[in-house]
Image (tube, rainbow, N blue to C red; front, side, top):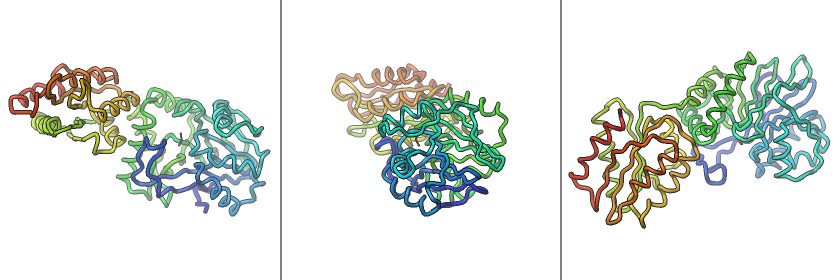
Length: 395
Ligand code: FEO
């Protein structure tokens, strides 16, 4: 079913209330999601993006109920990832000669995933335009590495809509489509989670791209991303957030992250949190067990933090596997401008804290020297090291 976005622009995507994970199981979905596709019906009829592969036949069937597919003059593929291109094969089986406008990298991505079918590709670069009638045109803007090499945004003049694809999106199901209709707390939570887990590694490019788009002096009335709410009420608010998030973002928060075998490392974690609060009552302090909390949501809290404290017991001369995997993910997200400290229990060899410090340095954190290490169960004599760790971390 189509939903009106503005004038002759409709949403024709898929709201995925049942989705639980994304990118395989690597990204948790707590509040549904959507794959947003758009139909523009000016003198020319244009389809912008499609939906994820499992929904391809429903997508084509629904589209057929709205228009004669042969009326589609152009398809715009802003991004080759299968959550937006997954219905292309089914659609092209019906209208095989329809021109597809996308970047050169997107052609590689689409042919790499779906095979070479002789589709009628028209490759575009930043600044290229496509007239769609009624005095309106589409302007293409390459969004290289935001977040794939092929990513692109499309701006529609006249209605001043930026179809931004993944940028400014959220994994968040909003039946009423628009940001002003969404639960505002969830909208912010899902937008920052999306930025942290998908876009943060490319923050330097985000900052440059925002400058470039600002330089075009385009009036943007609506930002229509490919996931989640469409920003029609003060769309600039999410651009402003991206500008802040792209600049080594931090709030006055410290996050303690740990895993534990027999609760010793957990006890240290909570004592560190208490001391953080004692020394700096205005600082937000959060504590997460890596094996119990959602890893994407922990990363979002890390993104908001000025410092983190990471704990692991020593296991087989190393760190516990849950923390090891989490640290690998932490490194991938390329956080900047954050401090870190390490702690942990051990029974005999006791390597975990040193290994944690090395891994945190490797992940780009400024690691302080002070640590808390406890032989067997932590006692008051072990906790005595906590105030120095906390005061050094808060400096
Ligand atoms: Fe929503 Fe990069 O795909």
